[in-house]
Length: 158
Image (cartoon, rainbow, N blue to C red; front, side):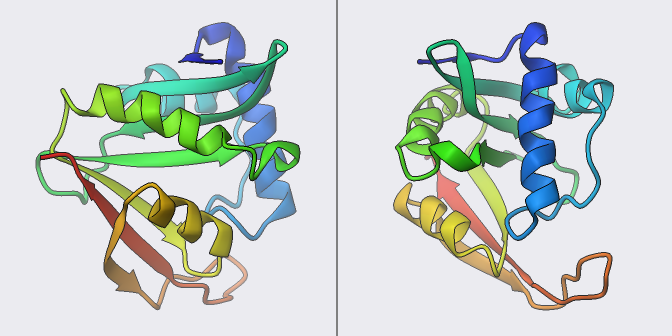
């Protein structure tokens, strides 16, 4: 089941993201989120347009958020997708994207996704959803100095 995220989902969603951060390798985030920071960033902050959760048997499997990012052109919004380790490859991301895309149609012309270049699964997911590469940042590094690069992909809604 996909539905808009609610304030009561915040602690579980933050824990899911913090687990992904701790495992490393798929997100550019390197520091865990507090519940308060998570809520502002993904649920009700001024730059957030929507956030959906995927649920099964009342358990949050993942979430996807759409919001403004200052470096993007006018009419573009940024997307982030986070699926729990046990639920990857089960269609959770695709189900989330269907809901997010429906909201985005009324809010923007282009959806941007910027993914670590070493995140093969993430790059594959966004390509499967129809996103097209448009920029490569080979200099992007993690806080330990390791260069991983980033790929920016776009999904045109118009």
